[in-house]
Image (cartoon, rainbow, N blue to C red; front, side, top):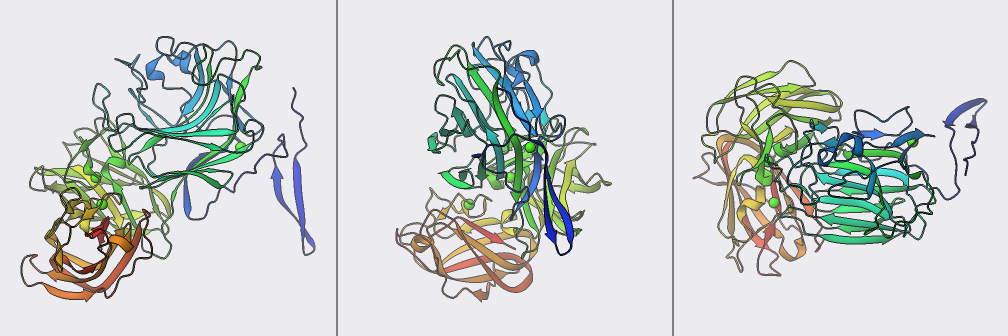
Length: 568
Ligand SMILES: [Ca+2]
Ligand SMILES: [Ca+2]
Ligand SMILES: [Ca+2]
């Protein structure tokens, strides 16, 4: 069936005596039940990357037009697509061949992805890659909001999918990784096109459990364009259809993932049903746009952006390694010893241009240099960083000059090895991340280290029936200036701290002085949703110790608990 071409539609409205041309809509087929595109500007969010598919070809800064080519050949994995009427059309045509004839006979795929690397998504028992691929990191984002406007393909034996998979920045030479969970934002089977399958597969991630879900839309998603949304935070993932929440999964992979869009045909049949030879070619997965956003800073608060070392774009030898003492329990290691071995952050957003503090939390058992380069300006050398041992961490402070909007900060060392980067903070620093912490009472299953590990979903919990008051003590090697703490808790009405004093000490050992009292703290929820409370006090400086003296707490389950405590 041929498409009808509509004339460009120009909308004019009268404003006073003038006529203003307000919108020119490109030629397009229009269907009554299409869900309209959302505005690209989204309140509370900053756009990090997108493709509206309005240019002659794909956005080459975003897309790599192959499907996992390291498992097969470039020829068999090349995307079959065109840009038509402002849409990307991923196509399957009769002459296309099986993408991997050895491991997946009969499956024909047209897909594009925002990254590529040897060993990514070892979905079956491969013992080796087919050939080496240069690493591509076009969009490797952790957390955010992502949106797709698309129309899927109908027919048995075929499915359309939007999914993400961990970028495996910890992988070794044999491709082993713990950071490779898979989120299927939707897999819509052509034999059941009213239903989205929404799945979470842990693969080798020990922190994720399998979660299979579906959402019934009530509409045939193959007939019209719909808007699909995916909101990913540190504690959960929310899935939207036409701006309505359809599913929440209360788990969250905590590392960068790449995005894949694909159309899949199983000519030998399989989990998507028997192959239906009567469905006409070309088969199409049509996509109007793909957009990625990150959370915008709260405009009422000063800039404070923390990024884990392990969340950077990592180049060359640089890779993620585990570290029990690090925030997020991981660091970016093997930076330096060559110009190509870089950790880069592309997404440091500042509302206003200016000079901001930069704190780098690092680990190094010897003197090592680190260069910091902002927006390709001249790098700044930080010399002889040394945390004393490979099992202790330290922080170093400098300043960076940022543009309004997204900024790029690179860390490297051409001359020799660099320290491992645990985390960086631009703007106001969470000083708890660089402190050592201890508590008078703890449940060993929920140790005190969890209170300042930089992970909101991990919890510190006291022992049952603690004697009050109880101290939670933070110590630094160097004197600090302090003016605020924040408590994040889940189930605050059942286990939140409800009254505490803040004490400080010059040496962190003796002469503790009470500088503030919380009064009664009331928690408004008793759910798994995190509630965060800030407590400000008159600024003090020259302190190597801060402690929370817990005087009262909700003890519904005999213990009190805190997910995360931040100190500014
Ligand atoms: Ca478009
Ligand atoms: Ca870290
Ligand atoms: Ca925590």
